Image (cartoon, rainbow, N blue to C red):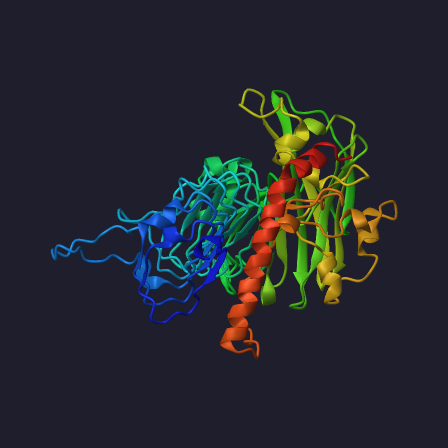
Length: 511
């Protein structure tokens, strides 16, 4: 009978201290040991199980702690077991995990691993997971000491770092942000997610980093109240920050009087037009500064876009992740630099505008200035203009040919009444079906319906909010529901593995 057993649920076995002779369960597929608080030993034969796909060791805190050796000399021992190669779903949540010489959560021989939960870990960083080519979901929620996540694998579809208060930087093996789900609420120290955004105080930037905006250094100690993505900004005034997003640089300033910020072309309305002149001798056009002066008369969230269009194919609209609110101090100035000089030709008509769709943001004037550099400077002038702007932005291209540079799903604002139906027509006119941006993701347009997304194949972790009320269920009912959920999850993971090759084919043949 034991040889036929496929599922063993020992959750909340409060007196369980050791797992012995598990080799007698050669066909076990699901093993649940969560909340076994006294468990200190698992026999090494668990690593030889060939069919174990789901292993839940959540809150087995004593299992991974340093223990005194049997010799009595007090030196710590390594854990007594290794994980089997067959694992697909593994939870080590709240196991007080740390990266030490005695244990490293590298999972170097688990090539099938697709779901990994290391929430509430004690580590500051993690080993490289490049070898986990099938990893789709990584949960690190409430890992308060975590500072860096570097070189995450390309196949990763979902990353959850809720309440990782110390997290500063995330990078990817491919140097591309391709996550379909990214949960990062309460990560106020997070200043860089590769190919997603980078937010840096001007005080920490060198003049060489700022280029033609190096004059901003003299205002580096001025403060503004940041608004926008509340996941990464603290609810207080902060020194002036520079935002890097889509290759665009932007910052918000108080209403300063400085000739460096005085636009070459200026309008007291929300738009202006001008014609590109010939470049000065020995100078090369590299981009355009766009600015506007504004006030905000209410704390309501503002939805707005900056737009640049030419009669020669440039059609860009941009909504920044972070913005500045001058508060009671009067007007503020939004300053941005767009590196599109290679696409601006002599005689082109350029139209610049700021479109406010909701909120109490009032634009008092907008301006634009062409930016030049010495012709002998090393510039990315031979790259296609859209790559110079910010890499491959094809996912952000609308059917009209315009680039919708925004990582927010503004249709969600309709659900809470901030935006009204028809807002997209205000932005792009009536020539586009709103389904083209409905369900917009951080990676751009949603996938075609015939190509199931990673998040459809690999269901989200969706951890509950800390302050959410507990359901009125008994412990046994909760245990049963969690067990059933894991069973369904593992079946869907298997389904995903079987259909992944079909999904890739559909991706290659998308229209």
